[in-house]
Figure 1 (tube, one colour):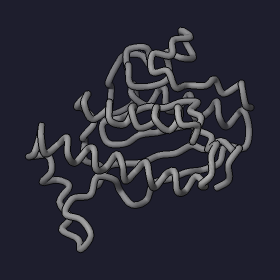
Figure 2 (cartoon, one colour; figure 1 turned 60 degrees about the horizontal axis):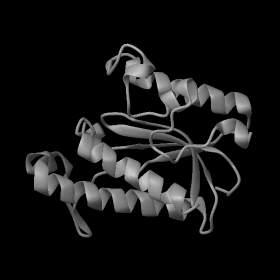
Figure 3 (tube, one colour; figure 1 turned 90 degrees about the vertical axis):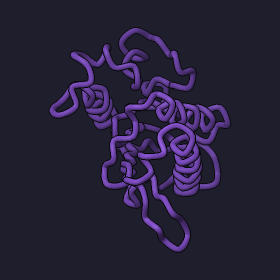
Length: 173
């Protein structure tokens, strides 16, 4: 995965465990994304945090390669989430117990996905998908994307970057 390319990135929790109903855990994800953006490791065009997965539309900016940034993000957020759960919801750790040689708990599935978005049309399709995801099917986390605060929808709809790390995709497409 090269820098200066836009990617659609998805990571899901182990066994699709619904951890991200807790706002404190969502903030761990958001703060980690913001850190990478402020440090100029990535540029974020869109995101959504769902109960058991996240979607990001991003461009890696820095060396090391995106794979290393991705691994660092996953490792860092996993540690923060584990410590948060120990302090706030230790019973949820039971769903994340793996007892492997190198760890007791696992937060993220091993098969996170990153696909390159080759065109403006692909970026727009993925933005529509992630922004509508909370209002679809089994989720119904809001009647419209405007009702769901854990995404980049308001940035595009109302020009409201309440998270202070978003870049409009048209700046680079």
